Image 1: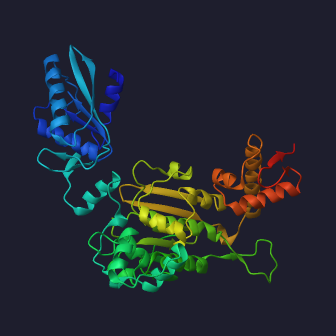
Image 2: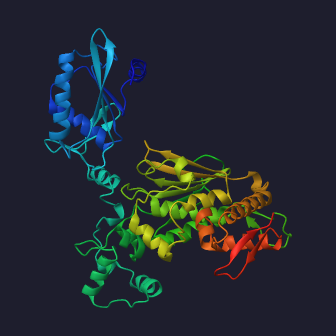
Image 3: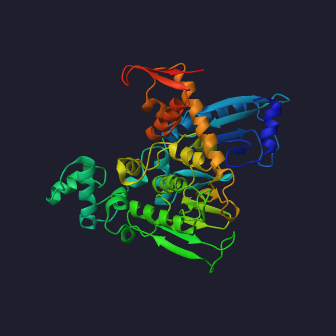
Length: 461
C-alpha cells in the first residue's frame, strides 16, 4: 500500500472492514479487535491513524513495539491463534503507519484470552450473547449445520407411514418395529441426534406434524391486488405447514391457482398455459425450502402481485456466495442432510447450483436480492402485462437453438462424448439432450457412426 492508497482508505472512514487506532498498548484489547474481524468478514486495523481520520503516524520506536504487540496478541491472546499480516507505510517526517490485515477466520469462532467471542457491528464490535449467533458462527465455519439441531421430538412424533414408504422406495428395506432398532436406524441416517430425539431434518422431512414442533418453519402465501403489500386487503391467503414435500405441493398449487392462463397460439378450446412455466417455481421453491437458513425463526413468504411474484427466504447467501455466482451455477450447501434427502426423491431436486440456472433458462426475467442486513434472500419473478407472453415461443426456440449449437460444439472435439456427459456439462436433463440430438439428426446436422456403445458422433458442416 502506498501513501495515496492509505489516504484513500482513511478518507472512507471507519466501518465494518476498517478501524483506526492512534496507538495500542494493551494486547488483550488488540486481540479482541482481531477476533471480531476474524469472526466476521476480515478487515484492516490502521495503527497510527486517529479516530477523526488524522494521520499523525508512529515513530520508529513505536513501530518496533507495536509489531511485537501485534505478534503476541495474534498468537497468544486469540484462541485459535491468527495469522495476520502487517505493512509499514511512510507518511513523512520520519513517521509510519502500520497496516494490520486480519483475514476472515477459517476456524470460527475466535475467542479472546478471557473466553469472550466478539463480532463486528458496523465500526464497533460487540459480544456474542445469543445461542443463535454462536450457532451461526459454527455454521459459517462448516463445523455445524442447522438441520443437525436436536429437537424435543421423540420417536412417537415420526410419521411412520411416510417413513415406511420412504425406506421401501429408496432403500428397499422394511420399517423396523423394534423401538431401539428404529432409533439406531434414524441416527445412522442422520435423522436423529445422539440423545435419540429427532433432529431438525428428521422433523422437517418425516414428522407427523412438524408445525407442532417447529411452528415457525412454514410457508405463508398471499395474493395481493395491485403491486404493493396491503395489511388487510388480499385476494387469497394460505399458510402451508407439514413436512417439506407437503409444503412444496401446497405452494405449487397456490402459484398455479393465482397465475393467469394464456392460449399462446393454441385453440380456444384447448386449456390455457400458465403465464410463467411452472418449472420456474418448482426450482425456486425447492431452493427456498432446502437452502434457507433454519437458524432464523421465520417462515418463507410467497407474495403474488399484479406485476411480479416474490419468494422470500430467511437468511442471506452463505459465506462468500453472491448473486452473480449463483447465476453462474455456483452453490454452497447450508443444510446437507436436507439436500441429501431431497436428492433421494422427496423433492424435485436435481443437483448443486443447477436449479437457479434452469429457472433462468425457462424465464430470464428473474431478479435476486441478497439482503445481508435484513438477513433475507428474495427471488422476484416478473410477470408480463395482462398475462401476455411476448416472445415466449421465440425465447424457447432461441434457447433450443443455443443448446443445439452447444451440443455440436462439444461433439466436434469430443466425438465420443456421451449423453450423460453432455447433460452434466450443459446442466440439462438426459431427456432434454436426447430431444435436441434427435432434432439435430433429423435436420442432418449430426449423425451417429457405429453403435451406441463404442461409436462416435460426427458433426456435418
